[in-house]
Image (cartoon, rainbow, N blue to C red; front, side, top):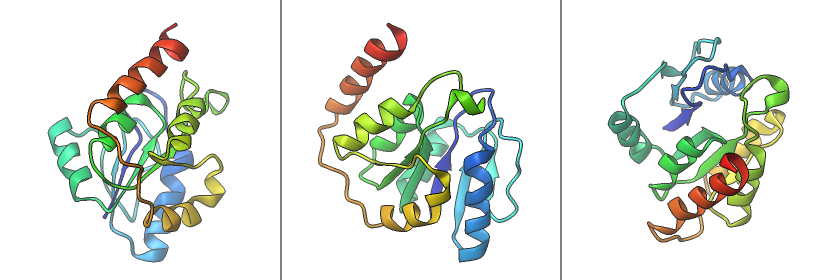
Length: 157
């Protein structure tokens, strides 16, 4: 199963959800999407707009791949598990988020913790490649500290 999280912010993320839904239908993939405020409603994927955190963490634990938006919360939750992660940053220029997410996704990708996808046209190839991805080993406390430092330096500061 693939679990996709697009966050709970007020902006839609059709750019990810629509092609993921189409690929799920085309390939027969089992996909669950935490949809948030995304306008497009999937036809081939199970979805809920908002999911209690403990339920979402249980779904992530069962997934063979986690696809997440590039925000702090989604990445933090996905990193708790030793699963392949595909992170798709939202872009302010596309009115998907007030925050720039690409820089954090690139930093996490450089460390080998996840795979970043910056052009949604490569989604199917990225999903297939991410299925075999093994994230770099990390200690349980290093990632939250790194994310907190990044947020403080680049977003909050």
